[in-house]
Length: 504
Image 1 (cartoon, rainbow, N blue to C red):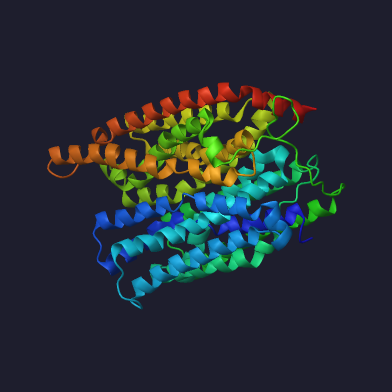
Image 2 (cartoon, one colour):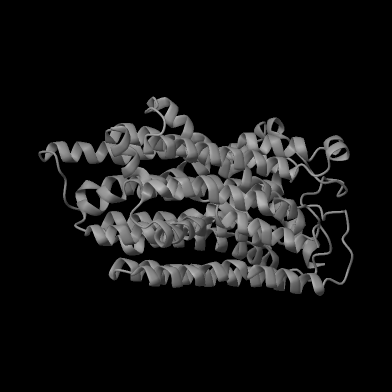
């Protein structure tokens, strides 16, 4: 059982469920600010390092190193080293922040606190890289679905951690930092030995992958209902305990699916993985390293599209308080939209993988074309906000489309450049995230809002405060659609080959 791909999938799901601490910065940011005497600008500087920590080039490099044949022959599977590196960083980063806030250690310099934040959030990339690459290796014929499941549970993890916080430490964000240091570290170290790349016949995998997907959807729906009720009513301690207990039972349920799938596995594992991209001779799998990938136009097309798509979405959610205030939304309404963002993010991460697989298998459509459609929908979401000020509809569209990009670029990376160096290449492309966030958050929406506020005596109310920013966001998304369309044209033959082989 230890080496079967189904148990590996469950272990990866559990690690993903507790790896999204970076999404919960708002829980402890006020305590961090007050305890260290920071102003808002300094706090924003530290939050930038939260985004920089999400660039996982080092995790990709380490994955390639430990998966090398010479390393494996001497030391066995190196995945445990990857999880241990993530666990050490997670514990060290959050634990040092907790020591700082509680006054156990002398107040650190701002740049040292930035380092703590970087380490804490950088740990997530080690967990995510291992889980996603193993999922692609174990389910090569359904890589979109498997990546969507992994990215989906990661998207839900912020909401899951917050529910545990409400149950155990409600009103004590300082202790929540200690929880973030200990809980993900213990879970990852406890189950990491079960995660292995163990590809086998995939002809009967889809029904069980669909069951994992159904569990994720049920958990997302349950969390959405809980979040809405928590923003309407005051939950007593017993209600928090009950709702969180049900949530944890749901999180354990993938184990039952894995055991059923293992019992019904008819064919022994095969060491040969179905090739994703074939050479012109149709014989060998294409495997590029980072430097080789960066010499291709396809790499930079993906990177350029992600700068504007990911950056515009992050600029929106990072400035949602100011946007909501300008449009006369109440604090409760804004908090509800922030809480529900993780649900829309999940739906996009899950749906982007699942539906792009369906799109490819049934219609032969390449994933870059599906990416074009989601980016076009995101532009429509920005226009809805810019023209009407309707955040409820606009944020749902933007959140879902934002989440879908993470599943799509992971899978597209593996298909265009190969799986061996997928972690390094994908995490390098994800550097577009903080770059786009800085450009569109600081230089566009922040600058325009400040200019409008200054012209009106220091505050700004009305649609005019944000209209131009969201028109710009829509425009850059349309530009991304054109870039992704070029990528689709360039890779159309690759995806036609994949679709043809899978239909055989």
